[in-house]
Image 1 (spheres, rainbow, N blue to C red):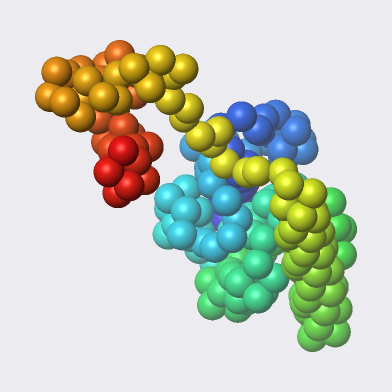
Image 2: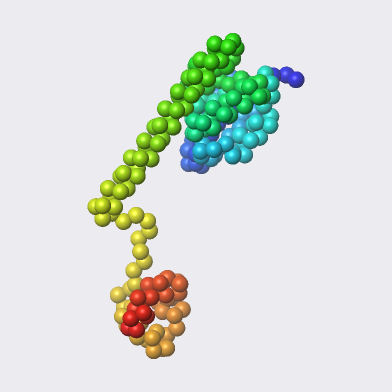
Length: 202
């Protein structure tokens, strides 16, 4: 079986551009059919293109990614996948942004140890950076809430003429659907908005 070169590209959302990763892979002349692209978070490896890539990757093949976080964002999972690819499948990996993460250069025991050590350090640092970012975001949200900032959708307000519609609804002159239509909201929202009024018998 001839050895093949594969490329893997991942972006988190449809809005993100894959061109930067494509340009990085271009010098290796990888056939388009052997470049696998996921538009999905890197929190785990349950991704359709990556799963298909793993079925196509065989001993002696080479997988190229631009950076280690394109492979995944959870450092424990990245290390596990690295070992599956290099040890279980017997394929090579080249990470373009980190030349030391290139198993085509390190075939002896010491080289493999150095490569895996660098991988663990890089992945661990990336994980720590993400954890710190989430912590800063949580602290920022807590501080904003303390200042009175309200998150989420702005609550729907009843129109100013609702005071005229309310007694007509209570008296049976108008139905809930008609009142909701006149207020520009759904009957369900109307019932939620007027729950307190009904409980007081207003």
